[in-house]
Amino acid sequence: RVLIVDDVITAGTAIRESVEIIRASGATPAGVLIALDREERGLGERSAVQEVNEALALPVVSVLRLRDLLAHLESAGEDAVLEAVRAYRDRYGV
Image 1 (cartoon, rainbow, N blue to C red):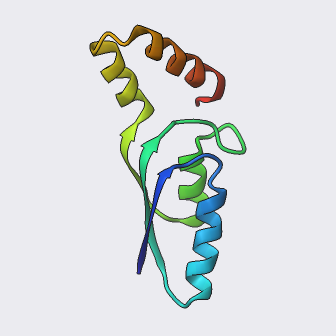
Image 2 (tube, helix red, strand yellow):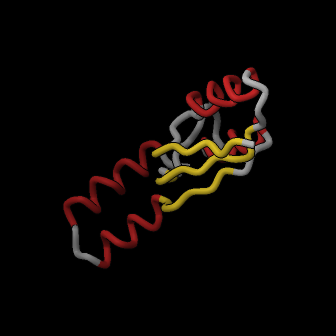
């Protein structure tokens, strides 16, 4: 059983490719661990994490979510960075 570890998830393409390689090697993917869930849309209206979870039937766990990063930036008074991250979320987020 193999745990897939990645920094972030965008559309889930790298994870899908990894699952194919793992299965072709005779192993079983057990789940996905990502450092940051940017909470952005996947290929449709759902988040990329939701799409990977459903399409591959694998649990996806994140160390940190975008909403956690936003809360930290707000509490730290990082206004310029906070606004940039909010703009990113507004454009790509679910």
